[in-house]
Length: 335
Image (cartoon, rainbow, N blue to C red; front, side, top):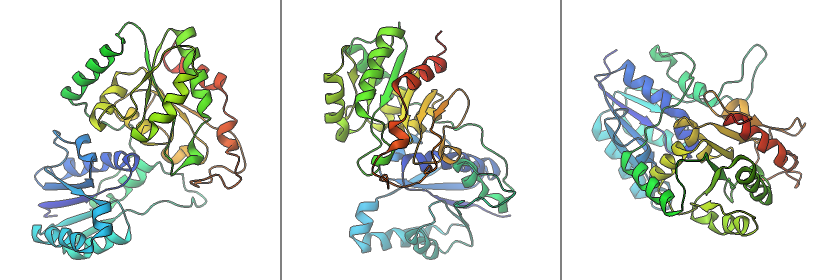
């Protein structure tokens, strides 16, 4: 199989992109002499910059391409000029279909999401589902871990940030991610319980607690920390994506629902306590060992809805502070 130039197309959510990385690694291993271009969402390139996983990174600006068709078509025509031998489409969308056609690649592989599990089949985790796309190339196997490098500059910036906040290496550092985003409220745990959990982690385990999140989470984190009895640190909106990965690598544990930071944490080998309800932990649960998933046995889950169809978020409100606290204690191996 004479493949010299490969296009790996996976813009989209951070978690999805991270779940596709083992497939990208496998491609590089299978075709070590091939030139691989990875197309990723604007802003996510920092996650793989400085690595050998791809020879070139091309940025996909979804907002720009959606608003200006000419830019999207120009992007596709630029792909065609590269004369790729293989187009690996891990997005499988209408727009990626157009780009596949525009690229003129001789061989095309398209990701097929496992939506139903037939009798005799097993539920594939997303990482294995992405990997299965490469089966026609003789690439098979299951994925046991995702590996994401931590940039030294980002790690140094995080250490400076923590020092400014009075946090040293003397006590376990635990990160809390209190929001899955406004677009996916069904995944959110009860905000007040994050504050209660943080207080207990600090008073009973002697831990330092840092709340993470984006700029849009600052107000929520401020409300939570203001109601606490102990002082927790807010990093919401203060760190870049690379620095957030470095911070999570520095932590002993992360508590989060099914969202990007959880998958970043597992990719830098930090144990997580995952709070799952509307999404299927068998498909998007934490990859690797040492993690704990908390989920309730309710007939309505996983619903895979962005908002709770019942309006109660019962799958998340049923998770207690005691359960999460005990899970964290087990993860960081404290008696």
